Length: 53
Image (cartoon, rainbow, N blue to C red; front, side, top):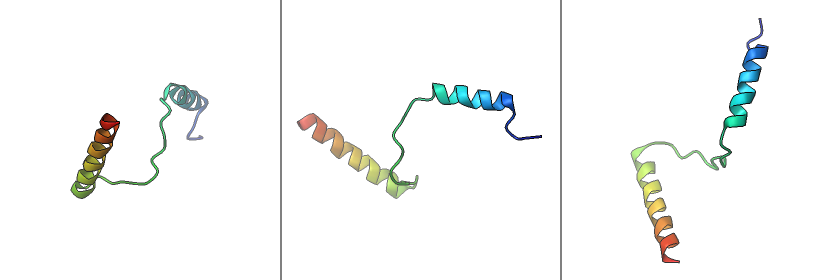
């Protein structure tokens, strides 16, 4: 029996239609403490730059 039955294919299509389109991650960033702190710093800088002008 195939893994993707007609019912499952229909379910996948419905889920795909509901999904919010988001930009793909350009690089794998990871979830380590060092990376998270670096991303947090970048986010703060970006937020400050946006607020400044």
